[in-house]
Length: 170
Image (cartoon, rainbow, N blue to C red; front, side, top):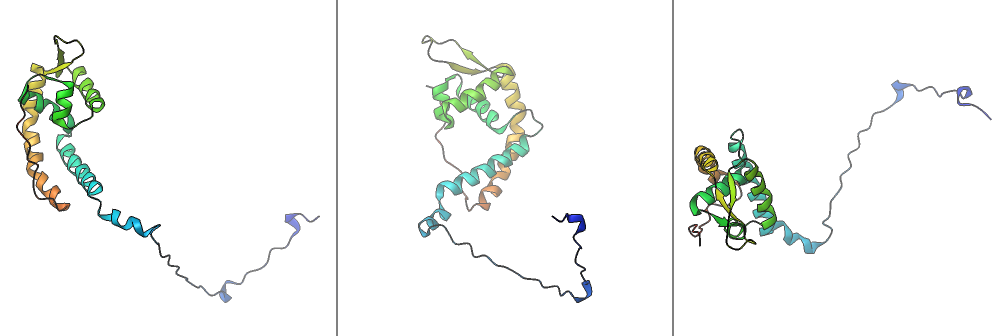
């Protein structure tokens, strides 16, 4: 058996080497032609645009102590007055679990509170004076963000804003 220390290394003469650069191109074929239609998926495009708009608002709210989603909840309660979690989730277009998670954060900061209802299964949420003050202070931040949102929408070929019915409590 020969050990590696005993094997002589080959001598390489660099002056005789020729450097060759090879370029290799790979054609990436779609896995299935039937999925090409997905490139123009309305759902995917709107989700992408929605994330961009949300990031736009979040940049403006940075340093305010509020997230854009939290401001939306405070602003909605400021307009409607107390609402049950079901009513609020319907108005905001949020899943109840997502809304409950956000409300818990707002309750911990004492910006919203649950108020008594004759049916104990229903939890009605109300803006506190501290929450109203926070919403009023953040309103100019929201106005600046909202004024620039049209630019973000145009990047995605969207030029109009949603038309929603007025927010009214029951």
